[in-house]
Structure formats: structure tokens, C-alpha cells
Length: 268
Image 1 (cartoon, rainbow, N blue to C red):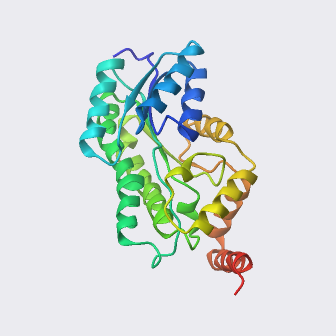
Image 2 (image 1 turned 90 degrees about the vertical axis):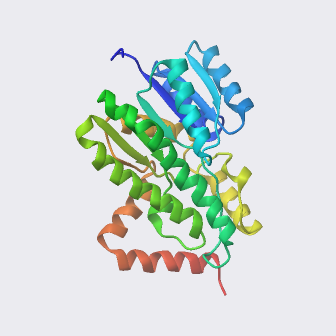
Image 3 (image 1 turned 135 degrees about the vertical axis):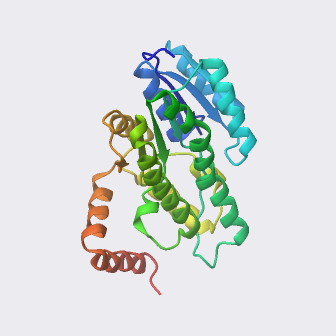
């Protein structure tokens, strides 16, 4: 394998952050494998990248299906001849308390947002380890760090992605393969298209996205820079980085601040 090759596969690459990451990698000269549940979206992003002079291919994948992710791996290897970076970005969204969220929706969330990342890591990490180089970027969320109520299934799945990434980082540390986990807060994306939960929660999330201080492109730039520097935990916004430090240093004070904010939004 040519050690000068730079090839990246991105799931959920047909829209939102995945599309922004595809363009960021392409601008840096990478060959981009755009994978998405909807083949037409992947094809559209592939065509956008090719129009800039980049080398890109498109693939259909359902990260909730074992065989589909394995087929993606085989197709990428057959088409591109290898891979250096893997971005597990595909995901869905939900809101609701633990009791409000139906068990069916818990299974749906964990199947895609957690096990979809597991499948991507299991499919591609052995290839990176065998060649002794590469990087895995798993996209989680600040919800996986915040412990905020009302996001029970989503926050749990994203917290598990952080824990998975920590374990994988240790497992691959001696194999020349890096691991990062991206934990953005709200920004403009199409994540609410597959949302499950109360309509009031969807409306609130849409408002937060509209008011977000960062764009998908800015998050992609931050993530790409962090991966290139070999950083593990990537929190794009300063406000959330402060909250994370506060939770680590003063967990009970953080909890009181968190519950006070929730009461202020939802007065009895």
C-alpha cells in the first residue's frame, strides 16, 4: 500500500456534518468515500466534490445493518484500494425522558447511534491496525457528556460512543492508529429529519440550531484540525468546553446549575 495515499470514508456523508467533513477532507487533497443511507444524497455530494477537482466515490449504507457495513468496507477497498481515515458520523435524533421514551425507540437509537459506530469500527479498525497507520473519528455529541435530562436515549447512546472511543483508543495505541471522538453541541444540520420524540422538543431543538454560534463547516474544520493533531476529545465550542471542565472539577455544582437551567426552561 502506498504510504502517501490519503483516503477517508465518511458515513452519513450525504448531508449536514458528514457533507461538511467530506468537503473539508477534499479541500486538503484526500480521496473521499461518501457513504449515506440515501444513495442519491451520497451521489450528490460525490458530484460536488468532483466538481472541485477532488477524487470521490459514493456508496449506499445502512449503519444499522451488519452486512451493509461489511459490504461498504469491501466496496471501499475494491474501489479505492485502501483507507486511512474512518469517520463514523451517521446517526439519528430523539428526545424524551427515560420513561417517556418507548423501549422500541431505545432500541432504534442504540441500534443506529451506538451499534452503527461499533459496526464501523469493527469493519475498518482491523484494516488500519494491520497497516500500522490511520485514524478513526467517531461522532458523538455534547449530549453524551452533559448528562442533561430529556435526552435519555440520545444522550445514553452518545455517552456510550465516548466510552467506546476511549476503549478503542487504548486498544489501538500500540498499532499506530489514532482515535478521536467529536462532541458538538447544536449547529445547523438535517438531524431532525429523522427525529423521534415530543413535538415541543423538536421545536426547541430547531430553535437552538438556528441560534447556534457555529456552522457545520466550522465544526468540520475543528474536527479535521483536531484529528490531524492527534487529539482525542473534540468539543468545538468554548461554552461547552467550559461546562465540561466544570462538570469534571465541581460535579455537584454543575448538577445544580444544570437542574436550575432546566427549571428555568420548564417552570411548573
